[in-house]
Structure formats: C-alpha cells, structure tokens
Image 1 (cartoon, rainbow, N blue to C red):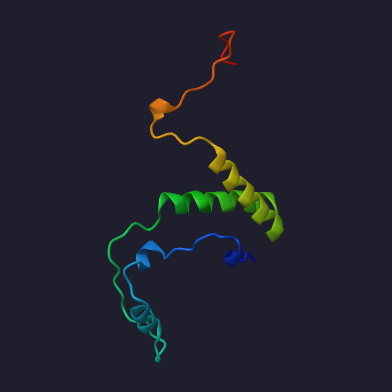
Image 2 (image 1 turned 90 degrees about the vertical axis):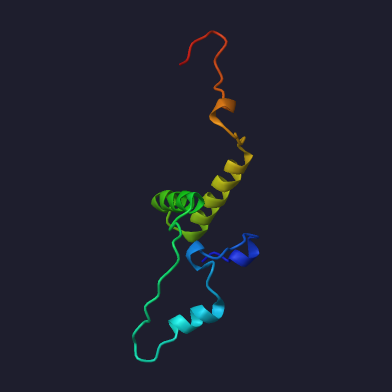
Length: 105
C-alpha cells in the first residue's frame, strides 16, 4: 500500500464531488432502510486528461511488475522523467534533431 502522506503528493477532490459539501455527502450516504436516495449530479466531465494519463501509466506498470514496491518505484521514476522533459506550448516549438549528414534514419 502506498502511504500518500509521506510522498508530498496532494490528493484533490474528484470533479464530480467538488460542489458537494461534506454534510450533504454524509446525508446522501447515510441510509437506514438499505435504499440510496436519488442523487443528480451537476454536469461535469467524468475524466480529466491528467486522470486518463495516470490510469494509463498505472495500467502499463501493472503489466510489467508484480510487487507494490516495484510498481510504486516505476511510477515515481516515470513521473520524474516526464518532469525533466521540455514542455512545449505549441507544436510549432517542437523540432526534431536532424543528423549532420542529412539522413533521417
């Protein structure tokens, strides 16, 4: 199990619950007769790009390693590597390096 408190990672509220107070959430989830009240959420995207990227990363890592420590290590090293890569604001800023002899291979 990953101890998120010691990692310095900030855990945020899911977008669908962002406008729901703690009292309302407890009220909706507290039921005596085993029936859940109907609850309509405001229209919001179900996934952000960051969530989809993280799910993809965790899924890929899960196929490569079995232990929790190994999986956590690969995820952390991948995220650190991504932070070291340059960030481009548009595609026009991205340039490929062409060898001096002109060959693209």
